[in-house]
Amino acid sequence: MTTAPSPTSPDWHARAGALRADGRAVVDGRRVPAADGAEFEKRSPVDGRILGVVARCGSTDVDRAVAAARAAFDDGRWARQPPAARKKVLLRFAEHILAARDELALLDTLDMGKPIRYSTSVDVPATARCIAWYAEAIDKLYDEIAPTGPGALALVTREPMGVIGAIVPWNYPMIMAAWKLGPALASGNSVVLKPSEKSPFSATRLAELALEAGLPPGVFNVVPGFGHEAGEALALHPDVDAIGFTGSTRVGRRMLEYAGRSNLKRVYNELGGKSAFIVFPDFHDLDRAAATAAGAMFFNQGESCNAPSRLLVHRSIADDFVQRVSALAPRYQPGDPLDGNTEMGALVDATQLRTVLGYIEAGHDEGARCVTGGRQVRAESGGHYVEPTVFDGVRNDMKIAREEIFGPVLSVIRFADEAEAVRLANESSYGLQASVWSSGLDRAHRVARALRAGTVHVNQYDEDDITVPFGGYKQSGNGRDKSLHAFDKYTELKTTWLRLDP
Ligand code: NAD
Image 1 (cartoon, helix red, strand yellow):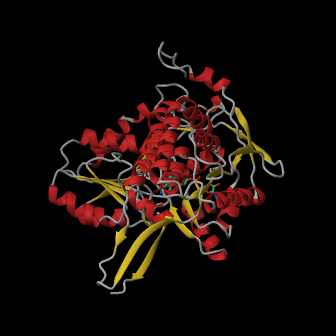
Image 2 (tube, helix red, strand yellow):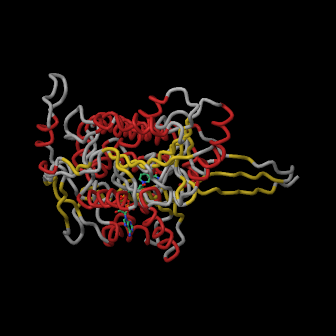
Image 3 (cartoon, helix red, strand yellow):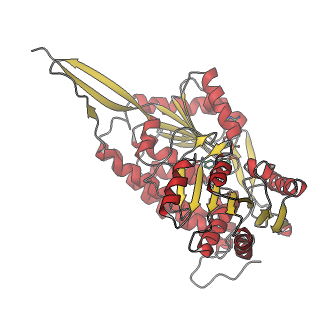
């Protein structure tokens, strides 16, 4: 059901109707179709409408984009500009992103189904902030002089790597791209970005905005297309120096194979998760904990790598806590993503819908108890929607506790004591994030230390910022996005040792 827009809120339906999405590639500063003219039609998961056609890039297009990126890198049109000049361009790029907020937000909402209230308030501002933050860093980073003896001067400097391939998913199309673009461009590299075939439009628009901001042609190229075509060609390319990949663990494995089969390019994988949210009975505000669990789980339709999809609750409070979380489900009933009041939108496509419903069936089959949700809804819209779903009585060895569902399905697992909570949380092939809720300082620190995860939240979940690293232990990946540490991925360390004669 669509609520009437308030007098001040934009009429997103009217804007969506007027939108013309351009899915052509951006190579060497120009919009181009695929070399062989191949294209595919992109439908919206919101209501099934056709959004436009997208260039189906293949190896010829990737060759052209990599050649453009290499030429731009080699002639220094970007890499050898003074730091202050590069900073200025990237800051302007960030401003252009903010100025195009409504258009970019609409593209992502229509492309992958997230509520417009969040694509405007989260995705666009976070993308701009990421670019601006790395821009600001450019002229504040110094290199090193090693502590040598008097007969030498040893410089330890960072240099851009060259051509970076960025392959990203559809769940936060612009933010995931920005996490690669920010540090890669700020450190002077050229980039070839392969957005997901499920969310190509905002990526190509970002490249246009970068050009308008003064980024020289060839420095930031976009090759839309499918993973096994454009993605594989990019990851296998002998002239790509590093791949920044965000996506599934299954495809992350392939990235390592591609590197092994080609030029041993660096591969940085940011992969899936099955994060544990651990609630101890000594936490003083169970309502807040429950609201945070539901909010973080159902945000973005559960299509977040760091969704706290395993809720570990001490058995003494489990009935009460499950009740509190389930009571919040009505708030997250899926609605029209173009309605400014909607909290949860559409799943990205029919395949994802089937996957999520398949996991819900597996939960029933394995004996877990569905306490709320579990059904497809709004099918009459032509889109793909699933209710917020909570399973109680889940064991950690069940499929719904082991595998990443990437949909709005929460699995509740009960524990008896702290040691069991830590063991259950760590018994996962993933290690992206975790959260511990306790009012005891000792326990909070003890458990946070024991958890094998790249980020551990204490008494909160989603408070986060570009200033801190993001990435996982174990099969959640290697390397880190965000923070100054991300520069490590896109720069080489060079030692220059000078002998000083007396
Ligand atoms: P995916 O692995 O299917 O696809 C990711 C990207 O890889 C897409 O651009 C796709 O076209 C491309 N690709 C697919 N097959 C390929 C191949 N054979 N060769 C080269 N490229 C290929 O993932 P998805 O469904 O787009 O995204 C969801 C996944 O992303 C989830 O597992 C989620 O946890 C993960 N994710 C991780 C993070 C993180 O920072 N750790 C953030 C967001 C999403």
